[in-house]
Structures are given as structure tokens and as C-alpha cells.
Image (cartoon, rainbow, N blue to C red; front, side, top):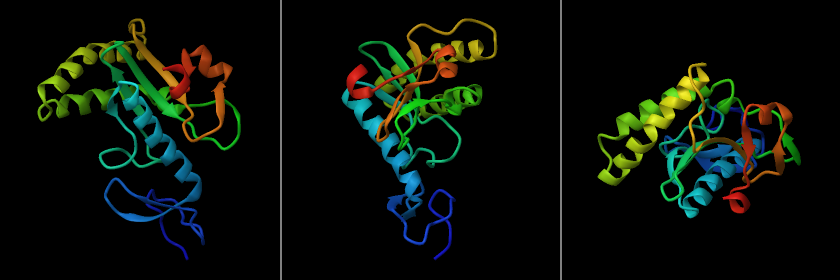
Length: 189
């Protein structure tokens, strides 16, 4: 059997997973992508359980496909005033994560997309959600200026790698030097 998986990757002869795409299409999923899909979904649910409001992600209805560009998630906790922008790495192997392009190389584009998305969503959201967006939008603009070399990184705004549904244990030196932390959602939040 050949064809395309939901995310546009080749379907193996015996798919190891089954999923529903953001467009609502059910079908086989390339098995290695299933772990990432599960990790992004799990991160969102765990953050919600910890009091965070999901601003972007995870993949699924209304989100992005598992292998397409974009943030794996952005979440805000109104009680702690913590804004978390993250990339989930659901690696099979243990050890440290060496790259996270969504929050390094592509951060400016992803912040810009997040700002635009939240601005558009504000027109249709309930007032309490709009208040949250108004509270974090200046912080996102400050982060964007910082990425572009015109200011410092905003307070209470963190870049992180998570490893839900994976075995990673930290971030490597290169990511750490960029201020990116490793967060185990269950343990660290």
C-alpha cells in the first residue's frame, strides 16, 4: 500500500497509528509521527490541568499538522502570570534535545503568527478570553522586538522544550545558552 499519511508523509505498509487530521480526515498515520502527535496533545491537556490557558496548539482540530511549521504550543497561566512558549520533543531515545527550530530559527515568524492569530480570535472570544489576550499581547510584542535585536526578553515569558510522550531529559548547551529551559510539565509546573 502506498499513499500519503494525514500529514503528507508516506504511509508504511502496516501503519503503526491511526489519527484524525485537523481537517477531520481519519486515517493511518506514519508511526514515528504518532508519538509526536500524542506528545503535543498530552502537553496541552497537562498544561490545562495545571491552570494554563492554551493560546496556540496542540496539533488537532484548529491546530497545525504534526510536521508543519509553527509552535507546538503557547500557554498562559493567569494565576502565576507565566507565559510559556514551547516545542515538544517526543523522542524515543533518552538524553538531551539539541535543536528546537520552532523556538529558535523560526521564533520570529511563529511569534508574528501567534500575535496575528490572537488578534483575529479576539473578535469572536468571550470577554474573559479577550482580557487574557490583552494582558499577554504586549509581552508577545516585546518578545518579538527582542528576537529582532531591539530590546530585552520580557519578564514572565519563557521558551521551553517539553518531552511529553518522549524520553528526553533536558536541553543541550546550545539551547540552554539561548535561554531555553527543559520543562517536565508534571514535575516542574
